[in-house]
Length: 142
Image (cartoon, rainbow, N blue to C red; front, side, top):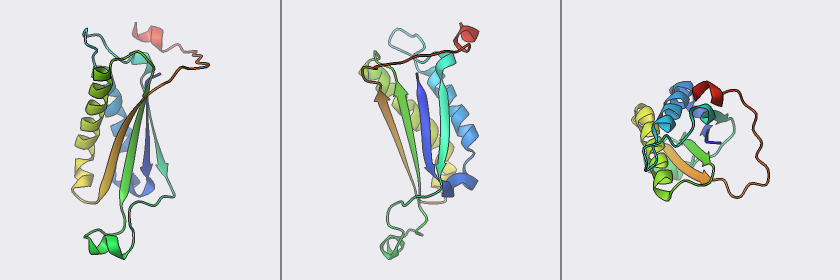
């Protein structure tokens, strides 16, 4: 169930190697450990998907934003980690902090050149009504 979904403004597409960011975030998830040292996210269950938004509005693209030092062409990246129930608050925070650090490092060259917002949100799946899985990935990593 651990998934990271990235939504981002389409104007960032030429400046970010999104496939590379996806791989880095997946690798970061694989390094997160529980209090007992065990791997939090099963290798076969880690998934990272990225979707550009072709239509968007970010902040003030008008005169006020330009007067404040912007250029009216702002970018935004939203990372959402969804995980199943049962992990401690410390593990959830650790996962969020690790993903934020990974994304910041990858995106720093873009932050150096343009105005950009980045949000990382961690959600825990509430009591699920139905959660079926069929995969031959998990046995590969046991």
